[in-house]
Length: 257
Ligand SMILES: [Zn+2]
Ligand SMILES: [Zn+2]
Image (cartoon, rainbow, N blue to C red):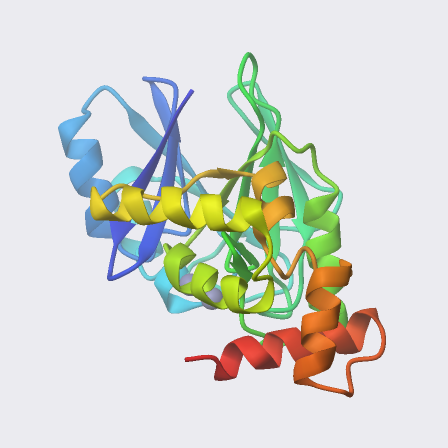
């Protein structure tokens, strides 16, 4: 299985997974990007599309791709997409050429947001998490509450640590700037920031990233740690428990320049 981030728009990645014969893509906001890859790889057939949530930068290419390839779309049961899809939710599985994608409900960024996780034979697992978990950050709360998002991130954080986390945006460096402001004594975070800066200077994606790394550096996965919760409390005295701390951290990030 080969995993490829196809860049789209200014900072989206459309993740493509293939076994030299069949491909799936995740959140194709732009169909042309995927069709161009397929044209260069004529032996690979796109047969499946996974969608994490309804935003246009994740769904804009669906109609185009379905028309050209006949691929089947699996997406959130609770959301409306621009094209008919098979709705899936927590506990469902999407079977694809020997893989079984576990569907995880992760509301917060949108009300029906889902993620897909699978074990890959002879490789480490893969998580497609859309706009819920980013490297060094998490999605904005457009339709859900801080309590929901914290719960969703807890669900993702419970997956095996070697999981390759595949978010839909290259937001890493701007997220790390904020993370360093919150969690300034974190040596793993400084080292990760240096490594990601170098990757971006070379024009390389910072993703995928292992879940273990995220647990060490992402303030939104570390909001219960002493370092992060103390910094948040200093910024906002109303942060008194897990949920209010997480909410204050998210608000702080929204306002951070
Ligand atoms: Zn979104
Ligand atoms: Zn997005």
